[in-house]
Image (cartoon, rainbow, N blue to C red):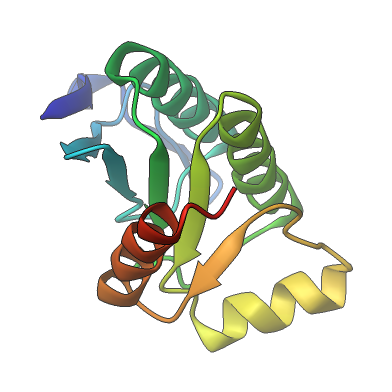
Length: 147
């Protein structure tokens, strides 16, 4: 099991003009290895820096683990902006270039609607309704030898 953590310094949290800016908020994004598949679940909305750190952590873990598949679960994401959509798409494309199959699962209807309205396509990414079906989809691909 691989676990990625970022540490928190709560005292650096400041608020100005009703907009909270937080520096160093604790973000824990687990990256689990199950057989030859990495499983990662985004459990909260992320700012741009967190999204880039997440992308880097996933790529690093993929390289170290030698996993052949990646499941990205976004069930907890209620909203998505263009930057986060780009990061998820690029993460999937990078994983494909590293030889891994990718399944994105758990997309909420409003997130799907937002992606369509933004004109964002998930290139080279298979999708599944939920985590269970996403994992099964990757296992089936491996069993059938789908490239």
